[in-house]
Amino acid sequence: MNYLSAGHFEIFTELENEARSFDERGIKLVSAIYPYLEQLTEIALWFNDRCDQLRLGKTKHEKYEKYRVIASDGMSYLLE
Image 1 (cartoon, rainbow, N blue to C red):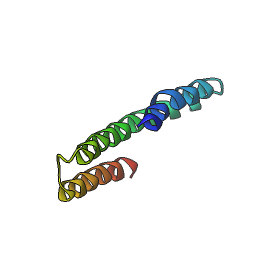
Image 2 (cartoon, rainbow, N blue to C red; image 1 turned 120 degrees about the vertical axis):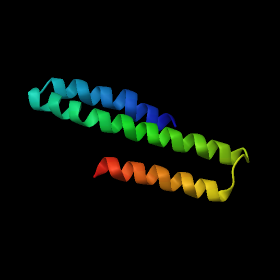
Image 3 (cartoon, rainbow, N blue to C red; image 1 turned 120 degrees about the horizontal axis):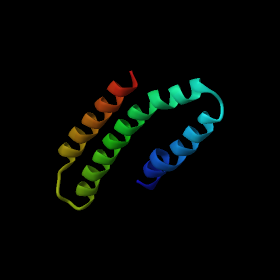
């Protein structure tokens, strides 16, 4: 999940700093996008936690599919 953390905390911060160097529109765009990025990251981390449980043998394949659908639906809703 390092790539998620990097995207959320490092890369986005760099983009935010770069947007500030342009104009007010860049700042507004960053402000509008960040809440979605935050929610998408939370969904992905939640899903990753469930996959870790699968690797440890704590859940069955049916539960994986259920978690995958929940995560997919949540992400789709945010991206509409």
